Image (cartoon, rainbow, N blue to C red; front, side):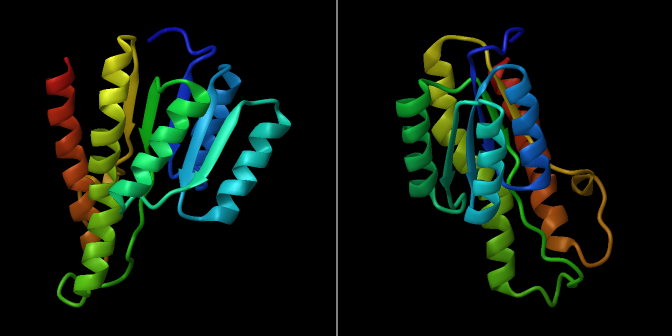
Amino acid sequence: MQEFEGKVAVVMGGGGVLGSALAQRFAREGMAIALADADADALAEVREQLLERGTNVLALKTDIASGESVQVFADRVVEELGGVHVLCNNAGINTRDVSIWTTTERDWEWALGANLWGVIRSLRVFLPIMIGQGSDGHVVNTASTAGLAGRPGTGSYVVTKSAVLALTEVLWHELK
């Protein structure tokens, strides 16, 4: 994909620092922006920044750990913005400074739900839309260098981000 003007970028985790930076960059290229985040306040702030620059923007509080929530977001994106050309799976959480054996099962489920299942759900919902459009597109899965090497206290984060790296590599082979 060489032309970005008039296209649509979806940024999961759009209320965070990196998500906001991605959205701002896509907006400078003339893209409409669809933002999803669990943090309504952060989402509203990024939305306002984009609106101030005249960007066509949709922002919706979305729980990436819920397939239904991701589907509702995707339906709104297609309905209001007309399609998807760039998908950024950027949402993620980190349970810090907890050893693997003391990380609770609930925290493991939380990390897996957001960091891995969130990406899987997003791909399952948005890729058929993108492929069905018959045009070029891009998928960006944010995994972090933590996915390559762990350090104490980051077990659930490292495990989930390593899985995102593996998922992305398989996806690359399947899409080419």
